[in-house]
Image (cartoon, rainbow, N blue to C red; front, side):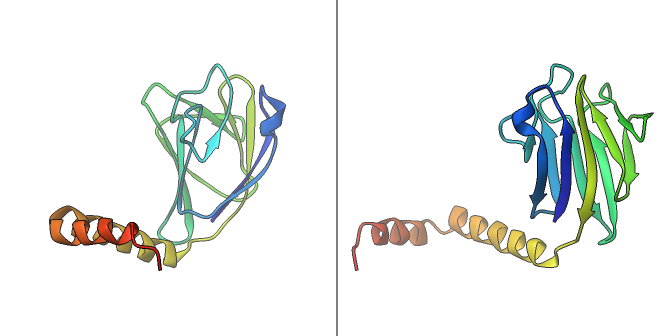
Amino acid sequence: MIQISVKDTFDKNYIGQYSIHKNLIYIGIDKGCDVCLEDTGIQSNHIFIEIVEKSKLLCHLGKSTDFILVNSKRTTGHKFLKVGDTIKIGDNSLLTIDAFLFQENLKYKDMLNTKTEAILETDKDLVQIMKAMQHISL
Protein backbone atom coordinates (compact mmCIF):
# COMPACT_ATOMS: atom_id res chain seq x y z
CA MET A 1 0.00 0.00 0.00
CA ILE A 2 1.32 3.40 -0.98
CA GLN A 3 -0.40 6.51 0.35
CA ILE A 4 0.25 9.85 -1.32
CA SER A 5 -1.40 13.25 -1.23
CA VAL A 6 -1.85 15.48 -4.24
CA LYS A 7 -1.35 18.94 -2.76
CA ASP A 8 -1.60 20.97 -5.95
CA THR A 9 -2.28 20.35 -9.64
CA PHE A 10 -3.85 22.17 -12.61
CA ASP A 11 -7.22 20.44 -12.17
CA LYS A 12 -8.17 20.97 -8.51
CA ASN A 13 -10.53 17.94 -8.65
CA TYR A 14 -7.45 15.70 -8.29
CA ILE A 15 -6.33 17.24 -4.98
CA GLY A 16 -6.63 14.82 -2.07
CA GLN A 17 -5.17 11.73 -0.47
CA TYR A 18 -4.85 8.46 -2.38
CA SER A 19 -4.29 5.03 -0.79
CA ILE A 20 -3.35 2.53 -3.47
CA HIS A 21 -3.18 -1.07 -2.32
CA LYS A 22 -0.37 -2.14 -4.61
CA ASN A 23 3.40 -2.37 -4.26
CA LEU A 24 3.94 -0.50 -7.54
CA ILE A 25 1.99 2.57 -8.69
CA TYR A 26 2.06 4.65 -11.86
CA ILE A 27 1.64 8.42 -11.95
CA GLY A 28 1.12 10.35 -15.17
CA ILE A 29 -1.49 11.74 -17.55
CA ASP A 30 -2.54 8.36 -18.98
CA LYS A 31 -6.03 7.36 -17.81
CA GLY A 32 -4.66 3.92 -16.90
CA CYS A 33 -2.33 5.36 -14.24
CA ASP A 34 -3.06 4.79 -10.57
CA VAL A 35 -2.85 8.55 -10.06
CA CYS A 36 -3.82 10.44 -13.22
CA LEU A 37 -2.95 14.15 -13.25
CA GLU A 38 -3.86 16.80 -15.79
CA ASP A 39 -0.67 18.80 -16.28
CA THR A 40 1.05 19.94 -19.48
CA GLY A 41 4.52 19.00 -18.19
CA ILE A 42 3.65 15.40 -17.30
CA GLN A 43 4.20 12.42 -19.61
CA SER A 44 1.74 9.51 -19.97
CA ASN A 45 3.63 7.35 -17.41
CA HIS A 46 5.88 9.98 -15.89
CA ILE A 47 6.93 8.20 -12.70
CA PHE A 48 6.63 4.80 -11.06
CA ILE A 49 6.80 4.44 -7.29
CA GLU A 50 7.64 0.98 -6.02
CA ILE A 51 8.19 -0.66 -2.64
CA VAL A 52 11.44 -2.64 -2.90
CA GLU A 53 13.12 -4.98 -0.42
CA LYS A 54 9.92 -4.74 1.70
CA SER A 55 11.07 -1.52 3.39
CA LYS A 56 12.29 0.96 0.76
CA LEU A 57 10.33 3.22 -1.55
CA LEU A 58 11.92 3.76 -4.97
CA CYS A 59 10.82 6.30 -7.56
CA HIS A 60 11.66 5.58 -11.23
CA LEU A 61 11.23 8.08 -14.01
CA GLY A 62 9.43 6.89 -17.14
CA LYS A 63 11.91 8.28 -19.68
CA SER A 64 15.50 9.42 -19.45
CA THR A 65 14.42 12.94 -20.43
CA ASP A 66 11.85 13.20 -17.62
CA PHE A 67 12.70 14.83 -14.33
CA ILE A 68 11.02 15.63 -11.04
CA LEU A 69 11.92 17.71 -8.02
CA VAL A 70 12.21 15.73 -4.78
CA ASN A 71 12.35 18.08 -1.81
CA SER A 72 13.15 20.91 -4.29
CA LYS A 73 16.15 19.07 -5.82
CA ARG A 74 16.15 18.02 -9.49
CA THR A 75 16.10 14.23 -9.85
CA THR A 76 16.50 12.07 -12.94
CA GLY A 77 16.68 8.29 -13.22
CA HIS A 78 15.64 6.87 -9.85
CA LYS A 79 15.59 8.03 -6.25
CA PHE A 80 14.79 6.43 -2.91
CA LEU A 81 11.95 8.21 -1.13
CA LYS A 82 10.81 8.43 2.47
CA VAL A 83 7.61 9.43 4.23
CA GLY A 84 7.25 13.21 4.17
CA ASP A 85 9.12 13.73 0.88
CA THR A 86 7.56 16.18 -1.57
CA ILE A 87 7.60 15.54 -5.30
CA LYS A 88 7.03 18.27 -7.90
CA ILE A 89 6.05 16.71 -11.20
CA GLY A 90 5.23 18.58 -14.40
CA ASP A 91 4.45 22.29 -14.37
CA ASN A 92 2.02 22.50 -11.45
CA SER A 93 1.63 19.19 -9.61
CA LEU A 94 2.89 18.70 -6.05
CA LEU A 95 2.67 15.35 -4.21
CA THR A 96 3.75 14.16 -0.78
CA ILE A 97 4.53 10.64 0.39
CA ASP A 98 2.26 9.99 3.41
CA ALA A 99 2.88 6.29 4.12
CA PHE A 100 3.82 2.96 2.58
CA LEU A 101 3.56 -0.66 3.64
CA PHE A 102 4.76 -3.70 1.72
CA GLN A 103 1.96 -6.23 1.25
CA GLU A 104 3.26 -9.76 0.77
CA ASN A 105 -0.18 -11.13 -0.09
CA LEU A 106 -0.33 -8.93 -3.19
CA LYS A 107 2.71 -10.65 -4.62
CA TYR A 108 1.15 -14.06 -3.92
CA LYS A 109 -2.14 -12.94 -5.51
CA ASP A 110 -0.27 -11.60 -8.53
CA MET A 111 1.56 -14.93 -8.83
CA LEU A 112 -1.75 -16.83 -8.78
CA ASN A 113 -3.21 -14.54 -11.45
CA THR A 114 -0.17 -15.12 -13.67
CA LYS A 115 -0.38 -18.89 -13.22
CA THR A 116 -4.12 -18.83 -13.99
CA GLU A 117 -3.50 -16.85 -17.17
CA ALA A 118 -0.81 -19.33 -18.23
CA ILE A 119 -3.19 -22.25 -17.66
CA LEU A 120 -5.92 -20.56 -19.68
CA GLU A 121 -3.50 -19.92 -22.55
CA THR A 122 -2.26 -23.51 -22.68
CA ASP A 123 -5.36 -25.52 -21.78
CA LYS A 124 -7.88 -24.83 -24.54
CA ASP A 125 -10.26 -27.58 -23.29
CA LEU A 126 -10.51 -25.88 -19.91
CA VAL A 127 -11.26 -22.54 -21.58
CA GLN A 128 -14.09 -24.12 -23.58
CA ILE A 129 -15.57 -25.67 -20.42
CA MET A 130 -15.36 -22.35 -18.56
CA LYS A 131 -17.05 -20.51 -21.45
CA ALA A 132 -19.83 -23.10 -21.53
CA MET A 133 -20.35 -22.76 -17.78
CA GLN A 134 -20.88 -19.01 -18.09
CA HIS A 135 -24.12 -19.65 -19.99
CA ILE A 136 -25.55 -22.07 -17.40
CA SER A 137 -27.79 -20.51 -14.76
CA LEU A 138 -27.87 -22.28 -11.41
